[in-house]
Image 1: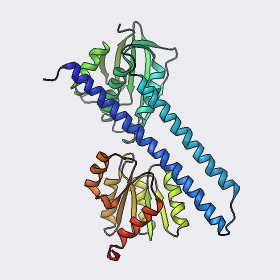
Image 2: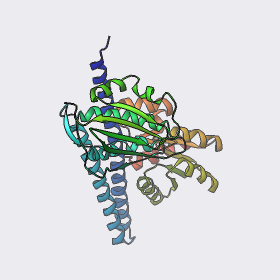
Image 3: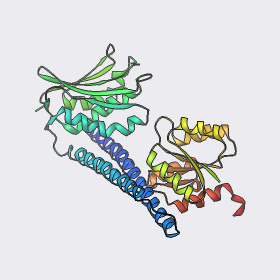
Image 4: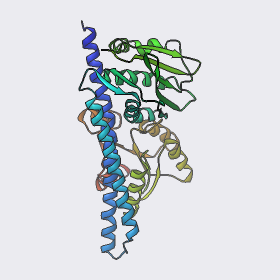
Length: 220
Length: 122
């Protein structure tokens, strides 16, 4: 029989794999665009060799498009690197705003596949908590994934962190159809174990259409 | 040959359309399934080149909708996936003859399109 730690470990690997697959898919799109622009550049050169004038503005435009894609690709790789390093330490101090911004980038594509836009709302003051960054990221993915199925009309999901006395809260808002089983659905399987590792609790706020992850300021 | 290209990456699909036009192939592009369906109002297409993964409605679902409206239309699928596992999963749905992995070699795409719309030449 698989014990809890093994289950959590496997869930973390699955989450890591899902995110890397999504990011690598995005990188392939960047390569595909650069490839087409380079191909068009070659086509225009071939045409110019056959006598069609080559417009310098057109070349500048193509060059800019390729540069923009390289900037986009570089950003994806930077986020992928930050995500990979979030598994370095089991407990670390993290800035909630920065973590949520990273997660927005990570979750952007899978969320967009459902036609939903993901945004973050920074807290006014910096909120630092001491927690397991990777487990927190996995837990928030479970919340975002479940939240997507609880959005029928709404097409904007917002992640926001805030201080709440001795603890911190992360709100996943924008939900408009909240089944009574929502909390149980998230906790089922590995969600409950991830919450336990974070010493956190999960609540559903039907009035504001939000999932709220309550976390201690420090789990050590 | 009239081609309908559908991919949510506008820069990819617009550039590919221009490159096909340079080669004498009339290509119209759309970035969503809804746009693709409305393109049918402006005429018929011999072949549709569809991205498998797109927001809301993916290429496999779009194929069914296009097919229902234009029964003779042929399809080729594009995907960013590249692993053996992904290749098997997608080709189970569409067959390996109708599937290309991004980045796409334009000559390979044209060869596939010609083969699919003129199979009798084989």
